[in-house]
Length: 297
Ligand code: UTP
Image (cartoon, helix red, strand yellow):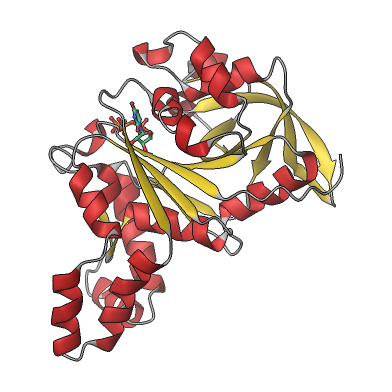
C-alpha cells in the first residue's frame, strides 16, 4: 500500500445499449447523444475524463455510431462556415472537442450487456488500469467524480466503484454492494471495502442502500473475470457479476463520491438535469430563471 504512480490514461465509454427507457428518441441515435442544454451527454462524460487527466477515450458503439464519431471528429465544413462568419467563440467550442483527445471506437454488434460491452475494449485498454464511464449518469461535482475514484485507486492500487445511497424500492434498479466502511484520510463513512455485489436485487433482498452508479476505476484483471462469467440478470453479461468474480482474488473499494448525479437515461432524470444545468449557465441561467418564475407552478 502507499501512494502509487500508475497513471490512468484510458476511459471506456459503453454506448451500445438499446436505451429503451428513452424511446422513441433512441430509436435511431444512442441515448449518449441526447443533448443536455447544448452538449450531448457523452461530451459531459468525456470532459470529466479529461479533467481527471485521461487522454485516451475508447467508445463502444452500437447503433447510431456515426453520430458519435462525427461529433468527436473534425468538421471542416462547420469550422469553415463559423470562420467565414467570424463566430470565434463557437469555432473555439467546436474545435475544442476534436482537439482535446484521442478517440478510438470499437463495435459491440449485439447489446449483450454492460460487461460484454466493456470486454470489447480489452485490446484497446491492454494491461493497465482504466476508467469506465456510463455517460447517461451525468455528475455535477466540484472535483470530477473520476478524479475522486482515481485518488483512492492511486492509494490502494485496487478497483474503485462510485456509490450512491438509494432508499426505497428504486434500489432494485441498481447493482448493490455489501460493504464495510474503511477510514481513509479523515474520510469516514465515505470509503468502503466491498464484500459482495448483487445486480438489481429485490428491495427486500438488497444487502445495503449503497448503489453502484456509472463510474468505475478498474484494474485489467476485470477482463478475465468478464470472460469467466455466465449471463446473469436479464440474460446479459453483467459487469456487476464480473466484479463479484474479481472479488475472489482482488480487493474492491467503493466511494460515496461528493457531487450530484442525474440519471439522464430516464426521462424525468433528464428533465431535472436539463433544468439544473440550464440554471447554472452564465449565459442562460438569468433569463431561464425569469421564465420559470412566470409559470406559476
Ligand atoms: P443501461 O442499463 O442504461 O441500458 O446501460 P440501456 O440499454 O442503455 O438503456 P435502457 O435501460 O434500455 O433504457 C448502461 C450503459 O451500458 C451501455 C449503455 O449504452 C449505457 O451506457 N450498454 C449496455 C452497452 O454499451 N451495451 C450493452 O449491451 C448494454
